[in-house]
Length: 274
Image (cartoon, rainbow, N blue to C red; front, side):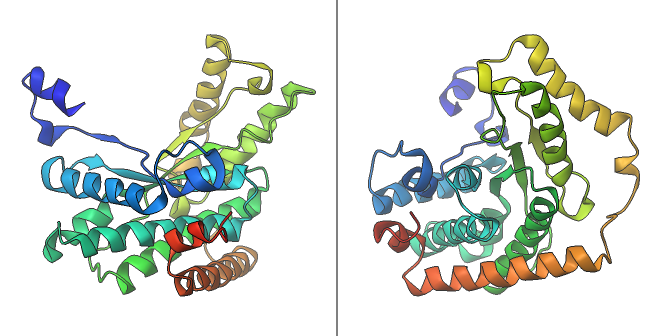
């Protein structure tokens, strides 16, 4: 991408985009890894440091908890394993010495996440609020990031595809809408980007009309409803707060357990995360 920009006379420093580049989920769910964990992390580290120094608007890694849920992770595991991956990556970048200490906030600010939203609506919304709280705490306490903007939890969502059924596929529409609402209703935990599968995904590749339907679902929410006109409508809800607090507490305990094992890479190699 950079070479194409250079060949066309464009300034690579202005390029914007995202590389997924999360290798932990390859060992846990997708299985398309090429190298062992530690050499893979080195490749990821080198790319992050290169882009921070040379292509500052690029998102060099997209920590993927999406695939973890598809592989069977609970919300606590999804949060804890994704956060542990992010910690392993940030520790590796910091310890590589390739980024000056004063620029480390730029590294943290470029980390993004790719999250799964399932049909358990309340739980999924609370999961996103917990994700944001934990990320803010980790980046502030572990890495000393004082700029709140650099600590922002930036995430995109694809709603759950695995739960879409081949039987009575028309019922997938309400599943998709519920899953989308889980990551849009709460302003304090609202996704930066949302992608929706087609209602008939379980039957085969969607037609243009099917894809358009998924797009229109988002447009109705954004342009016809009043969702975007209000502050967070769940602030002060004792039900939501209790669930978020529980998810945060359990996830932090699991993150600590992984750190005691030596971090995400060691927990992959031992087989624990799998």
